[in-house]
Length: 133
Image (cartoon, rainbow, N blue to C red; front, side):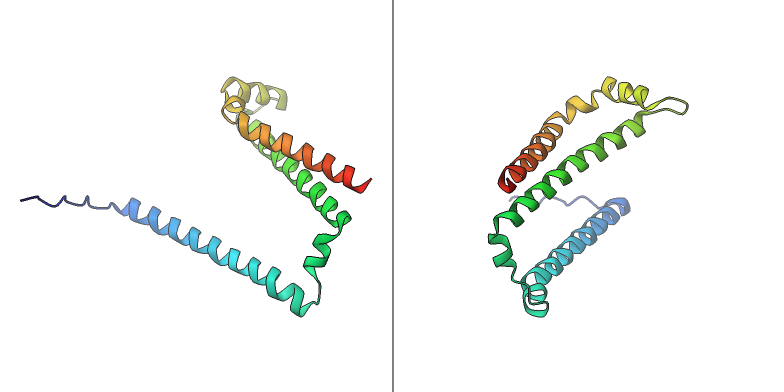
């Protein structure tokens, strides 16, 4: 006969972490449903704004590309500033914090993310500006 495997007893910390993860996931699900409701029902029906018509306009799409590119570059700048502040010791300047972050290979570990945010942000801004001209 084959014996069934015993299930390991869950610790209180694991149970709490699972509960928090579930609640965070539930929040994101509800937030997504609210955004979909606002975009699909509230804006077109209640406010009377035709989102599909707006999205077909080239200038609106170009402005959205520029805004998204600026958002990408802003996220990149904020994450680099946060990393530099995290690695700056008391009494040191931001340049020393940048050197400390580079010495811990923080930027080499996150190089692909930095590259995508930088390249994507610049490409979207340039694409939007070209479409506006």
